Length: 160
Image (cartoon, rainbow, N blue to C red):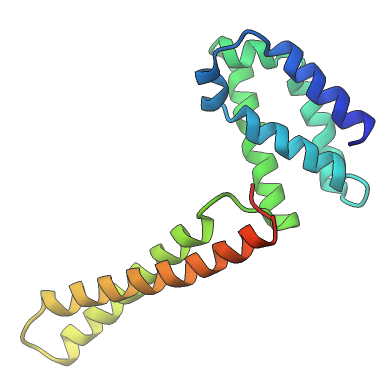
C-alpha cells in the first residue's frame, strides 16, 4: 500500500465515521475503496489511473456531504464510482460479479430468439414453439458460457 492510497483511505474512513451502514452499502463505498487501492497499485504504469487519482482527491473533500446530503456532490461521487469501474473493466480486466453471465445470457437470448424466428419462416406451422425453444436454448447456452468465463475471472482474482 503506497502513501497516497493509505492517506486517501484513512481520510475517507475518517470522513464517513458515524454514517449509517445502509448508506455506505447503497453508495458502494466498499467497492470504491477497493478500486482506490487498485488505482494506487496500477498508477505506476497506467496514465488513466494517474488521472483518476486527482478525481478521487477532488471528490474525497466532499464525500461526507455526498453520502449524507442529496445534491451535486452525490452525483459527482456516483459518476466517479462508475468512471473508475469502467476504467478497471476496460484497461485492467477487473469485472463485477456475474458480468459475463448476464452479458452472454442476453446475447444468447437474442441469438436463440432470432434462430427460432428463422425456423418459423423455414418450417411453417407451429410458430411460438420455435421461438420459445430458441429463447430457452440461447439462455442456457449464454448461462453456461458466461458462468465459465466468470469462474475464470474469480479464479484469477480479477473480481471487482
